[in-house]
Image 1 (cartoon, helix red, strand yellow):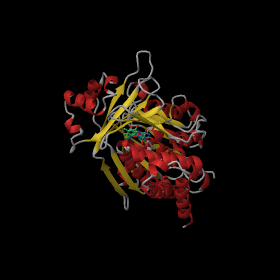
Image 2: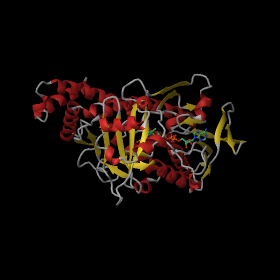
Image 3: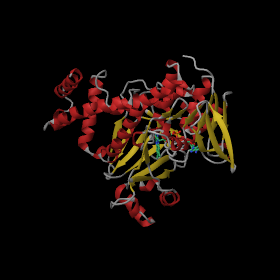
Image 4: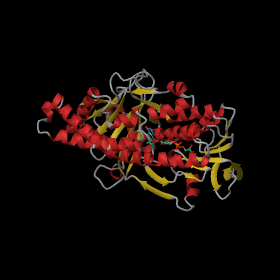
Length: 463
Ligand SMILES: Cc1cc2nc3c(=O)[nH]c(=O)nc-3n(C[C@H](O)[C@H](O)[C@H](O)COP(=O)(O)OP(=O)(O)OC[C@H]3O[C@@H](n4cnc5c(N)ncnc54)[C@H](O)[C@@H]3O)c2cc1C
């Protein structure tokens, strides 16, 4: 379906904004990106939250649509599964994908570690390299005039001066504290909810060995599950790992408020992460230099205002990072919007369909991410949970067309997140019954257990 070529303003040149600008320009629109920060090539870094990110199928599909798959592949490091570390040093590996399944890059089903700054720079440069895109760094959105019918007025602060522009459509991709959304909040029947997680995080770098090699297995996301808190580590192509400690800010024995000095931090690592301590000679320097950051969650509705303004990425749905889907879901917003431009002739329908399709998905991935925090920090250290995952993996192997575990649906499929959430709940109910068998440890791999689980699943589908 052809849309008239228009002038778009994309507010925020982060991961989602730069990708969307590129997609829109490839459709022939004239796009201006307004980014609050200065040009990262002139010194400052874009992004500024996590160092690296897990990129999976939903993100890859959007990158492919924007013609960026081959470029991003160059900076992507495959991660095959998660490796859990017990306090006694014992480790358990759990593969993410199904063995033998071709992955999105043809190298097996896995997720990929990418540098946030590297990916953002690549996307901004690709957008800027397109004749239809102009990037304006150092432009902070201060106001959006939503009253006009024929266009949208925007005011930016640039070098201490206001800059007024207008655009046919505005895409708010300015992150969790979006100025565009802020303005929409002051309109009738716009719902908004913001909540902070009671847990925060701190990043510590694990340096490479002197010869540049990794200090731990590099094709894994490492987790040290410790009940109410956890340490995780994701590799970077330069031989380092970014380690992130997630824990309550306060109110528990093991919480940031009780790790206030060097002795307490060293004691924490001796007590809880003794295998990592020798690999982190810079622990105390990083601990003292790096902030303890908070995690915010945002829900709002609708994700559009009339037919001229639209929210995408964290501006519409900021979630906690425990499913590795924040960026991926934001990129999927771009895919869905781009698909709608193919199928819907008028912008009013495009925008309302976008909210209708994406809002339940956004709510579902937030819910899934919150649940996955409990799974990662607590359940991955529980032998019964690991057995359940083994049974589910076996069901997937035996009945690949019928049993797709929740993690696979979220990470390796394009099933809408809310449908994956519902399917996962049905599987979970079945697995509880399976795990209730007193002899499950002995018979977990039997035909009988598998058939009983599948009979229940099929009955649910026919109900
Ligand atoms: C610790 C952590 C780990 C994470 N790990 C993963 C992961 O493994 N996988 C994953 O998929 N996701 C992950 N995420 C989530 C991911 O970082 C976000 O979902 C993603 O960055 C959202 O992209 P965005 O472009 O919507 O917003 P942002 O990346 O926040 O970009 C917004 C941009 O808008 C700019 N901006 C803000 N305000 C204004 C303004 N007023 N005017 C102009 N510009 C403005 C900002 O400078 C920024 O460049 C993680 C998040 C955290 C905190």
